[in-house]
Picture: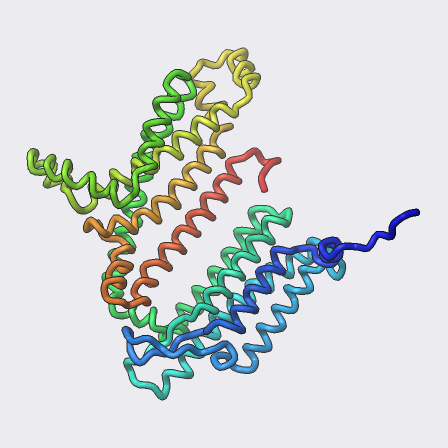
Length: 403
């Protein structure tokens, strides 16, 4: 006697839902919009504010737009209504639309609310705003990972999204937000610290590549040195960043005092010198490891064929091994760049400057918007660097394997 089979809830949901990640993100965004505050209204920059829900902050057309775009995402997450490629396109467009409507709504609420308030009143982002923004970004990233889209489509999407957000900022739509008022107060200093942050990152990446790539080649050529080399580099990674900055203060200070010329060149216990040295030390392991892995991944038959054609060892290295290992080497550079952008924030503790200076100033003043003024550009800078280097990784691959 056969036992009737009834579909379980997991089987039924699998037949109905094609993208569970999107359903999860959509549910998280809707719950945040319903339960968490969308914005905060404060009498001044330091006082705790009154929370404002999404229904209170948004106008009617903005609520309708959010619901319509959310419905489009829900339909795209189902298995049957839309073809796979069309569903991915709907997800990308709806996610971008939700992001822009969310951003526009916050700026519009600040403009409408502060008209009748005192000049010291502030409107800040609420937790629901951040959850909605992150859910939109993650939904778009997930769609790109699932779709078989090329790098040109990804680049075009990023340019459209970034350009749209930049136009909102350039139009002054966000000028009434608390974070933008903080920016207006320190505009010149912000530009200086932003450039300082970029200089530190670039100053760390250059030496890391000049030292790390030859060390990776050495590890590939000399097998006996691999264990010792990677053990030393792994040790650098285990030291907490603040501790490493602190450990470099005393020897560099003594070196600068012993040799005045070095002190004139900037070798001091605080400032740029310990920050750059620490960033280089942290950057070496990913560069060396990826260089070694890339060279090791070159097929031996390819090297033997190149030698059989009469190439010298140096020609094989530069014309065969390095080009084939380049995508893996660039992947290491991608890791190092994002890591350096984040670690440079901590360098502000030893007087190096950078965007971290605003974060620690905000913490000392209990001004969350000043903290965000340092944190958000750091995150955006890391995302842009990661995306740019990801595109370089794709372009460095053979034409038939680029995706």
